[in-house]
Image (cartoon, rainbow, N blue to C red; front, side):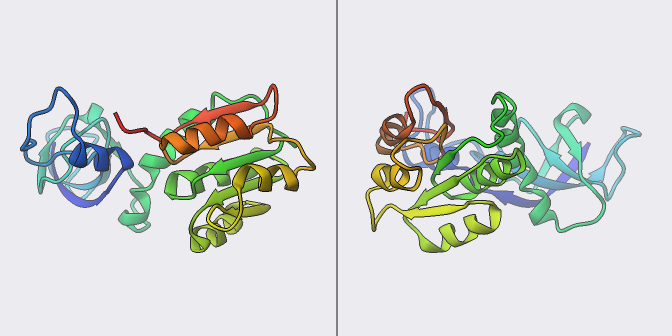
Length: 212
Protein backbone atom coordinates (compact mmCIF):
# COMPACT_ATOMS: atom_id res chain seq x y z
CA UNK A 1 0.00 0.00 0.00
CA UNK A 2 1.56 3.28 -1.11
CA UNK A 3 0.51 6.27 0.99
CA UNK A 4 1.27 9.97 0.94
CA UNK A 5 1.76 12.08 4.06
CA UNK A 6 -1.02 14.53 4.81
CA UNK A 7 -0.25 15.79 8.32
CA UNK A 8 2.22 15.02 11.08
CA UNK A 9 2.23 15.91 14.76
CA UNK A 10 5.29 16.37 16.96
CA UNK A 11 5.34 14.16 20.06
CA UNK A 12 7.31 15.03 23.17
CA UNK A 13 9.46 11.96 22.55
CA UNK A 14 10.48 13.41 19.17
CA UNK A 15 11.92 16.45 20.93
CA UNK A 16 14.15 14.26 23.10
CA UNK A 17 15.29 12.22 20.12
CA UNK A 18 16.38 15.31 18.19
CA UNK A 19 17.92 17.20 21.10
CA UNK A 20 19.47 14.41 23.15
CA UNK A 21 19.44 11.21 21.13
CA UNK A 22 19.64 7.71 22.50
CA UNK A 23 22.77 5.67 23.10
CA UNK A 24 21.99 3.31 20.22
CA UNK A 25 21.36 6.08 17.66
CA UNK A 26 23.84 7.63 15.29
CA UNK A 27 23.28 11.09 13.85
CA UNK A 28 22.28 12.16 11.30
CA UNK A 29 19.08 10.15 11.73
CA UNK A 30 17.61 8.22 8.79
CA UNK A 31 15.37 10.21 6.45
CA UNK A 32 11.94 10.79 7.96
CA UNK A 33 12.83 10.26 11.58
CA UNK A 34 11.73 10.76 14.30
CA UNK A 35 8.05 11.61 13.62
CA UNK A 36 5.57 8.79 14.34
CA UNK A 37 2.19 10.58 14.47
CA UNK A 38 1.15 10.62 10.83
CA UNK A 39 -2.09 10.83 8.85
CA UNK A 40 -1.87 9.76 5.23
CA UNK A 41 -3.87 9.23 2.05
CA UNK A 42 -3.67 5.99 0.06
CA UNK A 43 -2.19 6.53 -3.40
CA UNK A 44 -1.96 2.94 -4.69
CA UNK A 45 -3.02 -0.38 -3.18
CA UNK A 46 -3.22 -4.07 -4.00
CA UNK A 47 -5.15 -4.73 -0.78
CA UNK A 48 -8.94 -4.85 -1.33
CA UNK A 49 -9.57 -3.21 2.05
CA UNK A 50 -7.61 -0.08 1.15
CA UNK A 51 -8.44 1.95 -1.93
CA UNK A 52 -6.83 5.06 -3.44
CA UNK A 53 -8.16 8.11 -1.66
CA UNK A 54 -8.74 6.30 1.65
CA UNK A 55 -7.55 8.31 4.64
CA UNK A 56 -5.46 6.41 7.15
CA UNK A 57 -3.52 6.69 10.37
CA UNK A 58 -0.04 5.16 10.29
CA UNK A 59 0.66 3.25 13.53
CA UNK A 60 3.82 1.81 14.95
CA UNK A 61 5.98 3.86 12.63
CA UNK A 62 8.93 6.16 13.20
CA UNK A 63 9.66 7.95 9.94
CA UNK A 64 6.74 10.24 9.27
CA UNK A 65 8.69 13.07 7.68
CA UNK A 66 8.79 11.30 4.33
CA UNK A 67 6.43 12.29 1.53
CA UNK A 68 5.55 8.70 0.59
CA UNK A 69 5.40 5.43 2.56
CA UNK A 70 5.16 1.79 1.55
CA UNK A 71 3.00 0.12 4.19
CA UNK A 72 1.02 -3.05 4.91
CA UNK A 73 -2.57 -3.32 6.06
CA UNK A 74 -1.42 -4.18 9.59
CA UNK A 75 0.34 -0.82 9.84
CA UNK A 76 -2.64 1.33 8.87
CA UNK A 77 -5.92 2.27 10.54
CA UNK A 78 -8.72 3.61 8.38
CA UNK A 79 -10.02 7.05 9.26
CA UNK A 80 -13.54 8.38 8.58
CA UNK A 81 -14.20 9.87 5.18
CA UNK A 82 -15.36 13.12 6.76
CA UNK A 83 -13.67 15.43 9.24
CA UNK A 84 -10.44 17.38 8.98
CA UNK A 85 -7.38 15.14 8.72
CA UNK A 86 -5.38 17.40 11.02
CA UNK A 87 -8.04 16.84 13.69
CA UNK A 88 -8.29 13.09 13.09
CA UNK A 89 -4.51 12.85 13.47
CA UNK A 90 -5.06 13.52 17.18
CA UNK A 91 -6.62 10.06 17.51
CA UNK A 92 -3.06 8.71 17.75
CA UNK A 93 -2.06 10.53 20.98
CA UNK A 94 -5.62 10.13 22.27
CA UNK A 95 -5.30 6.39 21.74
CA UNK A 96 -2.22 6.07 23.94
CA UNK A 97 -3.91 8.15 26.65
CA UNK A 98 -6.94 5.85 26.52
CA UNK A 99 -4.60 2.85 26.80
CA UNK A 100 -3.24 4.27 30.06
CA UNK A 101 -6.68 5.20 31.40
CA UNK A 102 -7.99 1.69 30.82
CA UNK A 103 -5.63 0.52 33.55
CA UNK A 104 -7.40 2.71 36.13
CA UNK A 105 -10.01 1.41 38.55
CA UNK A 106 -13.30 3.28 38.76
CA UNK A 107 -12.65 6.96 39.52
CA UNK A 108 -16.32 7.84 39.94
CA UNK A 109 -16.44 10.76 42.38
CA UNK A 110 -12.68 10.61 43.02
CA UNK A 111 -10.57 13.75 43.22
CA UNK A 112 -7.86 14.14 40.59
CA UNK A 113 -5.03 16.42 39.53
CA UNK A 114 -3.36 16.56 36.13
CA UNK A 115 0.11 18.09 36.01
CA UNK A 116 0.70 19.60 32.59
CA UNK A 117 -1.93 20.73 30.10
CA UNK A 118 -0.36 20.15 26.73
CA UNK A 119 -2.37 17.94 24.38
CA UNK A 120 -1.74 14.80 26.46
CA UNK A 121 -2.73 16.48 29.70
CA UNK A 122 -5.86 17.92 28.09
CA UNK A 123 -6.87 14.44 26.92
CA UNK A 124 -6.43 13.08 30.45
CA UNK A 125 -8.55 15.93 31.81
CA UNK A 126 -11.35 15.11 29.37
CA UNK A 127 -11.21 11.38 30.14
CA UNK A 128 -11.38 12.03 33.89
CA UNK A 129 -14.54 14.07 33.33
CA UNK A 130 -16.06 11.34 31.15
CA UNK A 131 -15.28 8.74 33.82
CA UNK A 132 -17.18 10.75 36.41
CA UNK A 133 -14.28 12.00 38.52
CA UNK A 134 -15.08 14.56 41.20
CA UNK A 135 -12.95 17.66 41.73
CA UNK A 136 -10.42 17.74 38.88
CA UNK A 137 -7.54 20.18 39.20
CA UNK A 138 -5.25 21.05 36.30
CA UNK A 139 -1.77 22.50 36.77
CA UNK A 140 0.27 24.36 34.18
CA UNK A 141 2.38 27.50 33.73
CA UNK A 142 0.27 28.92 30.89
CA UNK A 143 -3.08 30.57 31.60
CA UNK A 144 -4.21 29.88 28.02
CA UNK A 145 -3.83 26.15 28.54
CA UNK A 146 -5.61 26.30 31.86
CA UNK A 147 -8.51 28.14 30.23
CA UNK A 148 -8.85 25.35 27.67
CA UNK A 149 -8.66 22.74 30.42
CA UNK A 150 -11.82 24.20 31.95
CA UNK A 151 -13.60 23.40 28.69
CA UNK A 152 -12.15 19.88 28.80
CA UNK A 153 -13.58 19.22 32.25
CA UNK A 154 -11.34 20.77 34.91
CA UNK A 155 -13.21 22.11 37.93
CA UNK A 156 -10.20 24.06 39.27
CA UNK A 157 -6.94 25.33 37.81
CA UNK A 158 -3.56 26.19 39.31
CA UNK A 159 -0.93 28.32 37.58
CA UNK A 160 2.39 26.96 38.85
CA UNK A 161 4.10 30.31 38.30
CA UNK A 162 1.68 32.10 40.61
CA UNK A 163 1.18 29.66 43.49
CA UNK A 164 2.86 26.58 44.92
CA UNK A 165 1.01 23.69 43.21
CA UNK A 166 1.03 21.08 45.97
CA UNK A 167 -0.29 23.43 48.62
CA UNK A 168 -2.76 24.99 46.21
CA UNK A 169 -4.21 21.59 45.32
CA UNK A 170 -4.47 20.53 48.96
CA UNK A 171 -6.18 23.81 49.83
CA UNK A 172 -8.79 23.15 47.13
CA UNK A 173 -9.38 19.63 48.49
CA UNK A 174 -9.66 20.63 52.12
CA UNK A 175 -6.13 19.68 53.15
CA UNK A 176 -5.77 16.29 51.47
CA UNK A 177 -4.02 15.33 48.28
CA UNK A 178 -5.95 13.96 45.29
CA UNK A 179 -7.04 10.35 44.90
CA UNK A 180 -5.37 10.31 41.46
CA UNK A 181 -2.46 12.39 40.16
CA UNK A 182 -1.54 12.27 36.48
CA UNK A 183 1.92 13.47 35.47
CA UNK A 184 1.88 14.60 31.83
CA UNK A 185 5.07 16.68 31.55
CA UNK A 186 7.96 14.24 31.79
CA UNK A 187 10.18 16.35 34.03
CA UNK A 188 12.03 15.28 37.14
CA UNK A 189 10.47 18.13 39.12
CA UNK A 190 6.93 17.19 38.12
CA UNK A 191 7.55 13.50 38.82
CA UNK A 192 8.53 14.47 42.37
CA UNK A 193 5.59 16.87 42.54
CA UNK A 194 3.15 14.07 41.71
CA UNK A 195 4.59 11.83 44.42
CA UNK A 196 4.38 14.58 47.04
CA UNK A 197 0.92 15.69 45.92
CA UNK A 198 -1.02 12.41 46.00
CA UNK A 199 -2.84 11.52 49.18
CA UNK A 200 -1.62 8.61 51.27
CA UNK A 201 -2.87 5.49 49.53
CA UNK A 202 -3.67 7.47 46.40
CA UNK A 203 -2.87 6.58 42.79
CA UNK A 204 -0.44 8.08 40.29
CA UNK A 205 -0.11 7.80 36.53
CA UNK A 206 3.31 8.76 35.15
CA UNK A 207 2.80 9.40 31.46
CA UNK A 208 5.29 12.13 30.61
CA UNK A 209 8.55 10.91 29.13
CA UNK A 210 11.60 12.02 31.13
CA UNK A 211 14.97 12.77 29.61
CA UNK A 212 16.79 9.49 28.93
